[in-house]
Every structure is written in structure tokens, then in C-alpha cells.
Amino acid sequence: MGKLLGGFLLPHPPILISEIGQGQEEKALKTLKGYDIVVEEIKKLKPDILIVITPHGPLFSDANSIYMEENLWGDFSSFGHPQLSYKFKNNLDLGYQIVKNSLNKDIPIAQMTKEMFKNYNLESKLDHGVLVPLHFINKSYDKYKLIPITYGLLSPVQLYDFGKEINQAIQKQKGNVVVIASGDLSHKLSNKGPYTFAQEGIEFDNLINELIDENKLEEILTIDLDFANKAGECGLRSLMILVGILSDYKVQPKMISYEGPFGVGYGTAVFNLIGEEKTNHTEFIKDRMKEKTKEARKAESEHVRIARLSLEHFLKTGMYMDVPDDISEELLNLKLPVFVSIKKNGNLRGCIGSTKSFEKNTAKEIIKYAVEAGIRDFRFSPITINELDDLVYSVDVLHESEDVQDISKLDPIKFGVIVKKGNRSGLLLPNLEGVDTAKEQIRIALNKAGIDENEKYEIKRFRVDRFK
Image (cartoon, rainbow, N blue to C red; front, side, top):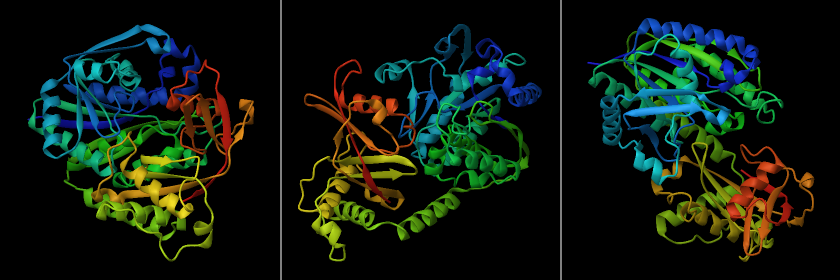
């Protein structure tokens, strides 16, 4: 029988590695000391298997993924150091058991074989979310096989349940296991970091530190994913899976170190097992999510109420609903273009609209595009009736666009952007998560339009009124 020995939270900035940092790593001494403590602990535990949960491997919106090739490798060539190269053996027995358990519980999981990497045009080498922790661990201990897992953009319930199934798989196989939740915290702690400053970044990092130190791990599972997105983090879902893995144990967690020297939060933590104590937080998560949705519905705007009712009506009847009687004159008398966006668990689930108004009034525009966003956004599978209670809507009413001659006149927070070349055009709404610069805004819009950055193209900007 296999045994879980413990879990750890580790950040993964390549700059920590001296060959890459070139002295800059000295600005993260707390993190390096935290790594020393973790590595020494892993050396004492002597695990046969290391499971590393990373944000930066083959990422899917609708499934977790797991490497299913025996020979694994990776290097830091993308960071200018191909000589930092690593090889590992995969523990396929445990990998297959994790896949089997997941499929039996209807938890979507992608088995990453050579064919899968080729089909999805993805690199098969290990990412830095795996390699940075193992670079430090291997200096003191390398007597293990590796299982790399990349979380999917799934709901907290699915991630937690996936963790539980990993634990069940561990118990069915031979070998002692240590789990590493690889992830940085907020990337928005200052304007000097990779993104612009966001207050949510500080709040998110403080919350994670508090919940770990106070042993309130179940509360990690209820952190609002939209709030986490605004914080610009990449470690929350790794932690959610880890909490699931730890669900059969009495845990004594502790933050070892925390700092944000480069505008990014680096946290190291240990999750010691001090006995068995079976828990199941699935219903707790569902109940908390329902409470949040109810609160959001109480405060929803008239525009959002119409969008929500429209999609619910269509999925239940197969027909577009009529304009409700109890709506404002503004929505009845004005004829404005709209975009309807739908999120589930903090992740985009659909977004469709138009820069021109074709319906009789704005109310009909919302009714139409709520359905379009729900079932005809080709990037996603159609929304089902079972998902309706988990959805959050927003409606953007567009103002008239205007030509822009200079990118300096753009502001991704205030203005949306339209790029056009002949019959090809791409639109991006303003104030989107992760879009912090005009250059990034233009790049995404060009990509949507299929326009090369070196081509000549038109740029327009527009304002929106966003209703939630």
C-alpha cells in the first residue's frame, strides 16, 4: 500500500536559480531559505514518488492533464540556459491509477502522450513550474520518480474532488509520496512587477498566508476565482488540489516564508500529516458557492437580469423570450449594440456581441446575445441547464467607436479596441483580466482577427457602460 508523506507549497520563479538570476536571486533570500527548509524535509522523508502540480504545463479549460510518457525531460532554454537540463522517470503505475479514479468519478483528465502533444501542437518538455522546485530538490535528493500534473480551469469542487482521487490512487499503489503544489501568489504587488499594481494582489496574498497559518484550508476552496484573477495569481488551483489530497488526514500547515521582491508573491509552506482525520468539503464548497451566487443575483442590474433570464428561458424552452413588461424606458427606446459575457467559477464561459445594433431596441439586443454567448461561442461547448446556477453575467453597452492614429491614445482600462484589415477585424472589450497594456490589447485583437502585427491595419477605440 502506498502512503502520503506530506505536502508543500513552493514558488517557481527561474530567477531563484543562480545561473539565471546572476545575483538577482539574492533579493529573494527569504524564499531561498524557505526552499532550504523544504528540501531538507523532503530529504528526511525519502519519498519514492514526487507529484508536482503546476500551472504552466499543458493547460486545458475543461480538464486536468497528466504526463503519461515514461521518460520526462525539460530545460531552461526559454530562459537562456539550455545547459540547465533535467531527466526524470515517470511512475506510470500511479499515473494510470489517478486517470482511472478520475474517469470513474467523471473528473475530466487529459492523458498527455506523444500523440496528444502533437495533436495539440504543444511542447512535451517539462515547464518551469515543475523544474524550478526539482532543481533545488535534486541537489540533496533525487531517489524518486516523478508525476507532473497540470491543473485545468475547472471549478473548485472538481479540483478538490480530483485531489481526493489522487489520494485514493496513492493508497492503492506501492511507494511513498510527497506532493508539491507549485505556484506563485499575486503577480500584481507593485507596478515594478510583470503587471500593474492591484490592491487585490496584496489582499489575496495576505489571505493565503492567513488561511494556511490558521489551518483553515477548507476556506482556500471558497476563494472567489474572479478575485483571484484580479490578483494575478497562479498557485490557487494547485493549492485546491492539494487540499483535496490532504482530505483524509489531520494536517498541521505552516507558512515557512513569504516575500514579494519583484512584485510577485513567493510563498513556501509545509503541510505536515499528524494523523488520520477523514473530511469531505464538497458540500461545503457547493453551499458557499450557492450563497455567493444568491448575493450576486440580489445586486444584479436590469441589463444582467434580462441576459440571465434570456439564456435560462432559451435552454428550458428552445425559444427566445419576449421582452419583459417590467423594464425601463431606456432599454425599450434606445437602440445600442451590446456584448454579453458569461463566467463560470471565475472563468469565461462565453462572450458574443456586435459593434452595430440590429434589433428593435437594446433589450432585444441583450436577449439575443445572451443566447448567442451561451450556446454559440465556438471557443466553448454550449452551456447546459445544469450549469445555470453557477453562471455570472455582465453586459457591455457600446458607445460609438472612433479612429485612433497613435497607440498612445489607447487605454486598456477605459477603452475597448477594434483592429481591421480588409474584411478581417478583431475586437477586445476594455478592462479585462490580464490585459494591462495597450500593446497587449492590440496583440490579442490582431490574433483574434488573424492579422499579422507587421501588416498595416486600422485601429478604433470605444467606450462601454458595463453592467453587472
